[in-house]
Image (cartoon, rainbow, N blue to C red):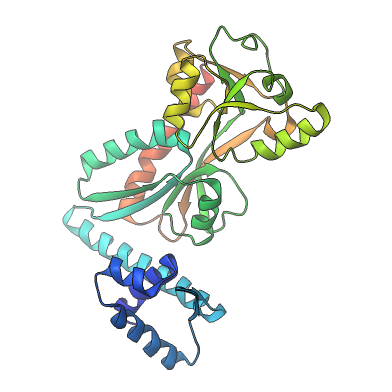
Length: 304
C-alpha cells in the first residue's frame, strides 16, 4: 500500500472528515477522496461511511486504519534509525501525560534530550482522561505518563511511582495537622478542582450519598498551575498526588494529607513506552531520561 494513501486514511480517521483532512494535508479534497475510493475498489469494501458532514470508519476501515498507523510508525522508526548511522538522531516523539508530571518531569527530560539531540521534535498532549483513553486505545503515543491501567495494552511499564492521593492545602489550614482526611471532612471547606478529576468524582459520590456532603468549589479549571496558585493563596483545598508539588511541599508552603478512602489510598503513575517503538532512537533517548527523572522524583517524594 502506497505511503500517500496511508497518510490520507490516517488523517481522515483522526479528523472524521475528508475536507478537514485535505486541509491538514494541504491537498485537494478530491485527491483524498479519489485515493480512498481507489483503495476501496481494490479491496472490495468500504472503509468509511458518510455521516452528516463527515465520515466514520467501517469495521473493515478500522483494520486498515490500524495497519496504516502501524506502517507509518514503523517507517518513521526506520528513517530515525537510518539517521543514527551518522550519529545524528532525527524524529518526533508523541507524549501523552497527566498534568502533574507535565509540570515537573517532562520539561526537564525534554530539555536534556534536546541538548544532546537537537533534531528530535516533541509533541506533548495534555488531555483529559477520556482523551487519554482514546489516545491509548489507538496506540498513538510513543510515550505516556499516566496512572497505571491494565487496559493500556501494547505498552511496557518502564518506571513507576507509587503514592497516595491526598488533600493539598496551606500549612495553617484546619485539616493540615491530620494524618489522613476523608472527602466528607474536606467538603466542609472550599476546594479547587481540576475540570476532570478522574476517579475522585465517583468516590466522592459514593461517600457523599451516605454523609450528605458535597464539595463547594471555589475554582474549577483544567490548569494545574492555576490550581496551585489558588491553593498557595489559601483559597481552597486541592486533591492530588505529591508529584506536581514537590518543591512547595519541601519548602513548607503546602501540606499533603493523604485521603482515607480505600479507592484513593494508593495510586501508581507509570512511564509507558510503546512496545513497537521502544527501539526507536528518538523514543529511546527521551525514555532513558524520563526513567532517571522518575527515580529522582521518587527520592524527592520519599524525603518529604
